[in-house]
Length: 524
Ligand code: ADP
Ligand code: ZN
Image (cartoon, rainbow, N blue to C red; front, side, top):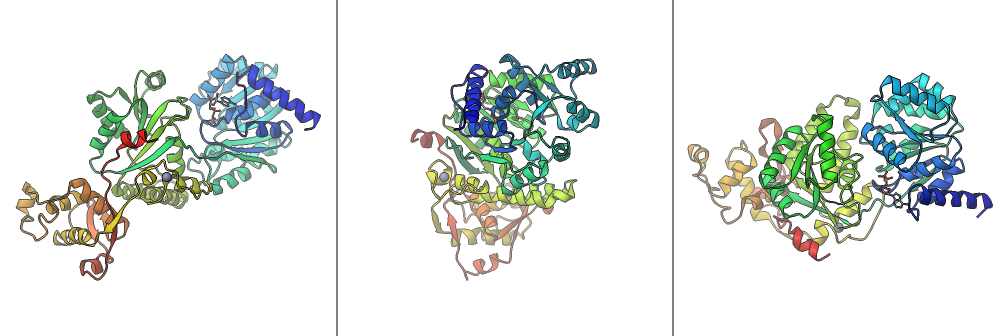
């Protein structure tokens, strides 16, 4: 080591200990800090909780001037700055929540060189007078947090971020770094390009979170499944669903079962949201039912489980949301409740979205998410492969590895379902088909004389859940499709014909109807 890098290292280690109270750098932090201190641009890809903040906070305290941190979330900024101030660091933030008088005060202190770190929202940063103001300061480093927001390929593109590409032009000699917790290959390359990073030092840590068990359960009676699952868990958890109405509904139902829980979404008053977050962090409540509005910037290490009641729109979102479990490194679980019907609906929403430019990208991202849900191979492999982290080994800690799907000749079962759909005129949804298969005699069946057709009762010996699972497999294999334009009715496809005529056979997975999470976890 050269004397200079030696000195830098000593400095960095001293800052780490004296300011942040940590004895050692985590993987990657030291290299990134050294590179940045030497004046080089950097791109840092670390999973949530990996320790990205220190990668710019430590250099900020060593550089002579100020470090500007671009951050998209007001709550996140405030938390970070509060934390820094508590550690004795002169830091501040500027965003739309700051009253004008206070702003002038901050500007004055900036001019006096009082601060080491300035957090700022992207829309503010790109105002010209603000850039001018920055030029009058001694800016040593610019850090762009959540840098994937700059990319069209990212799952969370923000218009405000696009402008950050001009920063490099304004500050060509100032080292700049982008940091993100989630980037597929296309996004990664795009971040560098959009931010105009100059031959950046790229650090990526593994995205594997080995202590998280990935589980998937086919939705069948989703609310009951959720209640059962949550009641079986110990410790804190988050349940994500895709609408505010569902947040309200599910949190009420869980509360009725004695679960200490609260609903959280962007429609609640800020004070209420803050209180819920606090209660969750302090373990006054165990479970948060939330839309995706919840979680960014929540630093709770002992979240034991994350449930996705609805299918997320991209693997990046899924990864980020499940990544909030088990930050303490102790065993944690991610449960995805999956239903083909949801997928069809989401595809339609995406296609109806306002930003037509992005439809194709979003559909592609969603297709990858669906493929993850439908995968019959190790889920961790699928996830890591998506982030170009190829792994040949099976993880032993996902539902597929723990309980590999067993296959059987499903020709007869398939014929039962397909012929039943056919006899019902392809005009009913899956639950009705199942009722007929199971020989139910409820009012509608009797009125329509569906108790008289030949397939009535031929599936008596099996449960609702079993048939739901078989039907989903037939959908995945392209023999049935759901027509969401007609009340989610089941239709036969061309491929169903040879099967109905016994001209071909089909292999199916033996339905797995419940996760015995307690049992599987004990064997860890
Ligand atoms: P990220 O921004 O990547 O999600 P953070 O920077 O918030 O992660 O860090 C996550 C947690 O890890 C924080 O509580 C932080 O204090 C802690 N941490 C970071 N680096 C170290 C380290 N070298 N030693 C111990 N704890 C660390
Ligand atoms: Zn696995």
